[in-house]
Amino acid sequence: MPVKAVLQTGGTPAWARDLGFETWALAPVAGRPALEYWLELCDLLHIAEVRLVLSDGAQAVEAFAQDGARWGLKITYSFLGPDEDPDLFLQRSPELWTEGLFYLRAPLFPRRLGEQPLEKLNLAGTHLHREGGRTACLASSDPAFLASFIAGGELALGAQDFNELGFLPEPVSSLQEYFELNLRMVRGECARYVSPGYTYKDGAGIGFNVIIPPAARLQPPLVIGNDTRLGAMTNIGPDVIIGHHCIVDRQSELARCVILDGTYIGRNLEIRDKIVAGRRLIDPADGTVADIEDPWLLATVPGTLRPADVLRAALGWPLALLLALLQCLPFLLLGSLLKITGAGRFASGTFHATRRRRTTLLTCPCPGAGPLPLLARLFRAASLDLFPALLCVLAGRLWLCGQEPLRVEAEDALHREFKEYFPAALTYATPRAEASDTLIKRVDALYYAHHRSLGEDARILLRALCGRFAGLFRGAPGEPTS
Image (cartoon, rainbow, N blue to C red; front, side, top):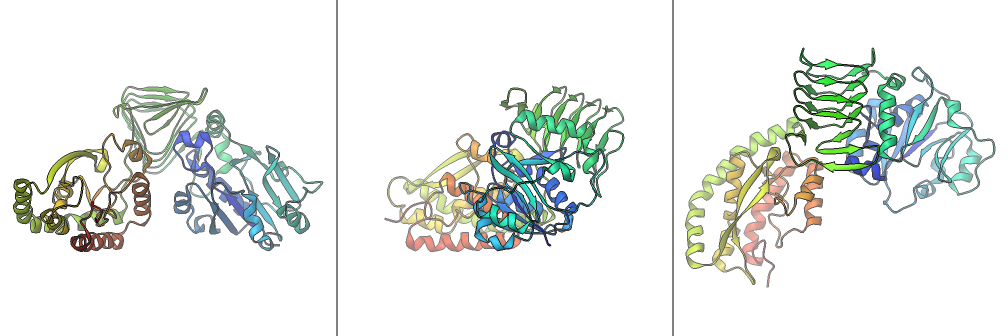
């Protein structure tokens, strides 16, 4: 009988939030997302069809798993609200699962019990794992049991534990348990999960494009992810996991610690028995979380640009230059008239820019109470108020099209939420008739990060410029109509 898998990826327990993840499924274990271990297990169980039920962190999960081809799986997606009972999903279409089901309901890790990697498994009978009085994981090929379970009936007698299959769903309910799981993995359990493309030999697993200078000292066991750079005279190990795209600067010492993806470790630091996630330092023993403000100590490494992003930048810069040249003289003339007549006033503010820099941006004209005068409306309809932002594009501090720039201090918390930040001169908010609130800025930023492309940039550009001109007749953008 064809067995199908349903994996619930939603839910953000406290320990996952402290690590900076929207969902537990993407929290790395020995440098690989927890979800990847479950997907590999599905392949071992001869399961080809996997349904990932999304909730918190849906966009990131879908971007990671995609169609499942890399694991030899066919992955489809459904969505369940954060407040909905996960078991209700099975009840929507009970006939789909009664031939055979592998069901993950709660945040668990499939810890393998043998010393060697698992071979292909034949799923027979019923296997259950319960947490907090409810079924957290089950695998069954018994149609009668599955029909009863999906309908909310009693559990079948004689169900077996998962250790009969060679693995055990292990709960991760705290930072300490997450930390200990990673230490067990680096101390040897990594070898049980090795699949094609991964190696773990002599107590060390080292990824691709890792720069290790001759003066660096490595003491296994340790795991180092892809695109990571170690500085001279660093001392790494034992019991260290370093994620992907990390930098450990010179003369720093790491032992018994977990460094998550995209983290910069400054010079001359000694880190032991800690978890580090970007600029966040975590003591798993007592759950203490400290955000380090000094970027010379701990920081987040900016993400690498995709080829499409490089093309967007290459095309955006000359287009910004053309727009700036066209606007230069009208901006000087109308801007001077605005200031002389008092029809509008200019103000400057500090905003978060590209590559974690800051930039000063002139906003003009700043509306007061009531509708803008006709001269100010003409100024905005011609998009001349965007001229200072176009200069920032030419200076490499803003993109031409992207997300709405966030103010320093006032919107620092929102800025820290975004793993991908593309502040731009032209945004979804440019043609709107009212200023964006925090919720709208968050939605716009997440949408753009997921859909950004040359086509999306062209759409933003056309809507921004045409919407500004239309604003001349309906009330200026940034000012509600009277």
